[in-house]
Image 1 (spheres, rainbow, N blue to C red):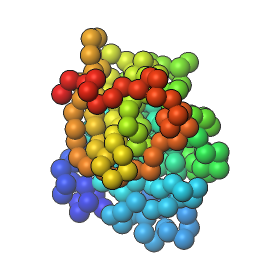
Image 2: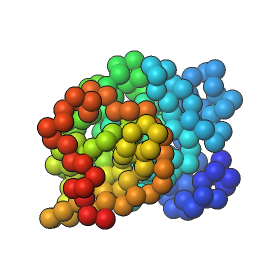
Image 3: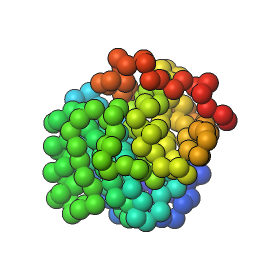
Amino acid sequence: MIARQITARGVRDARVLEALRAVPRELFVPEAYRDMAYDDCALPIGEGQTISQPFVVAAMTAALGIDEGARVLEVGTGSGYQAAVLAGLGARVFTIEILEPLAERAAATLDMLGYTDVQIRIGDGYTGWPEAAPFDAILIAAATDHVPDPLVEQLAVGGRLVVPLGPKAEQELVRIRKTSSELLREPLFPVRFVPMTGNAESDPSTRRKFGFFRE
């Protein structure tokens, strides 16, 4: 997986690769799909959600540039696999999942594997985790057409936010860097994620559209 799917596509951050090697991906997918756990594809995990393909997990993790001890917010816990990889970098991970069955399964898997630096909350990730902010990095694991204002506010100055932006057929993974005066937007590559639900679907009043950013 590492050689063929990840380093061959340009992700060569040694710490990220080591974190990926350390996480048993097969334990984060339903039993029926465990023989496909390391294949170059996303897999269903129930509730209409998926675990991202290994390369996408690696690329998103590398794009965040996480140092040991960093505080990281993940929106969309899913299976818990991405949170485990982030924790493997020495981060303190705060992860939010809107679907209770997924959150409970992810929590059970992470507990079984001994990931004590991951906290899971059931709720709408649109509003973030204010009492745990500011965050050095934020990863949004669902597609949206805008970056929620609460998440921008909870990102520390100098922090990075990675998000799939755009409609279902035209999403692009984007890295956003927050300075003291602006947000810098850097397109990375095309992706396809399930859409963000909850307030992301119904609250147009606080939307930061693409034109807000300076590239």
